Length: 348
Length: 244
Image (cartoon, helix red, strand yellow):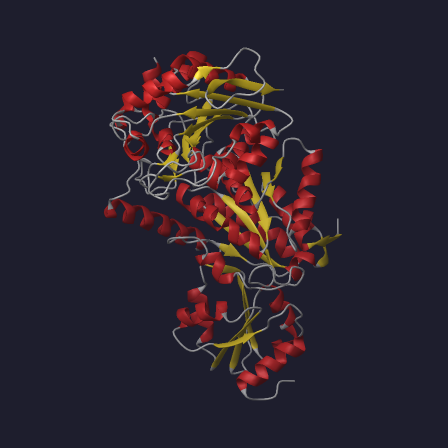
């Protein structure tokens, strides 16, 4: 049946479809709808466990505990809360806890513009926690995709044995669209690890060998562990190559945009080629190189000061033009204006 | 045998000679053995610090969480699997300083956990800095003129809750300690054991003790059992206060 549904609501539906049975979170705009909806669900379904945590640090650590205890678990937040969750994300990678963290982005730094949409946590998503780790992250741009990629995020988490980030923004999270989620078929990956209370294992944030024995001064064991984890993430990510590409042979310019900005710039498709990454991390290097080579100008339009643009530049090994759209209120006119300034010609 | 619960193949532990934490492990293993707790029905959660290392030396699933995050982690484990006995063992720095906010709220939510807090009054692993339970005036490597502040009042924090279980004991009083663990495990809510325990190398020597033995003698002479029915423990009393 077709329903009018919020992006945040579709994320909740997707999580439940994926088999989530634990949520911990702290209220924060513009992600609060997820907490409220899941608390209502939990009140009617006692098998679903819910904790309203004292802060985002507790929430993120709680989902790691729930994961090791055997539940598919998730949390949702926005930029400032995501910052508080960073230490637990690193921990989750170290103890290999499959979890999903939703970040409905708003402008930063700090408290900034709580009800406005933004994309300012792209770098934080990959590099926010201490140390080297290889997170997988998706960024849908519609309510239907919120549902689909919520499920895929849980699947990727189980397969990579790590925290997976589902990105959204204040616009996508609060967007209402008509969808029929029952008509969408996404396969669900089952739980991958035996729960706590079944073995004699040791889960530790300290460096450890394959038997989980603490090894805090052995470079070879550390490198072997890191390489194993890195390889696993690359292999899993290879099954999640999601993007959208609209060729335009008459244009010399490829515009890269994702999330809500990809919706804003869609009318430019008649004049430009468009590339929309859905899997934000690992960055779609091969696909970007493949399509970027056909164009003279590579432009990234995003709601931050060139965060993804810098990553694209690194992947395609040539200059990328950054068109930042900041401050929350985005429209096509501002995108046109930014393009005009950077390309040095009028854009209709 | 309680020794079956200990991962003795990993011994020697990395604790200093004369450290009290080894005794925490032994006393806990004895209680678990007596109660029939093993890897099929229980799990240990510990945090960062000397005491946090304890969970790796047990033959049950154990988690060495981030610094200060034992309680929200353990609360979630218990929520997902209420049948599992979830025992938290960590230091006072971990539980009452960096994890202080979690202590307030996880105890307020009355999560059904057993918490053994090694109140050794110092950050031992980093070389002896003042911790949240360091008595006022104590010289440490971070308070060369003596700690200027009164220690955190964990008993008061626990008693601020509508329901609470607060036990104070020392590592010298082993039978009492084991009874505290047993009662805490049986308690249907958040049970906190405030364990006075010796760190000889990074605290005791600076205080003038020559050996762990002298510290244990000090606990023996200083800490007395609270009168039956006491509704609050005085500073050098051991006992259990609870309200269900």
